Length: 75
Image (cartoon, rainbow, N blue to C red; front, side):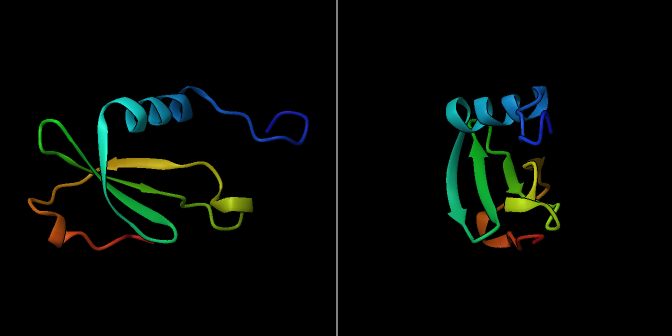
């Protein structure tokens, strides 16, 4: 937060860059999304700070699943 406004930090900017350039969306729910990269790794995007407006900053985490059907959103 800067002057009461949410500001992107280096982590948020990296998440934005990865989603735009390196990841393909597979599934999306209200508060989570599943992505895959070009190496076959699965990634989960969540908003884990539910007490903040909009769920707060995003979190992108690499998952240890072998198939998209194994995904169970953490939110």
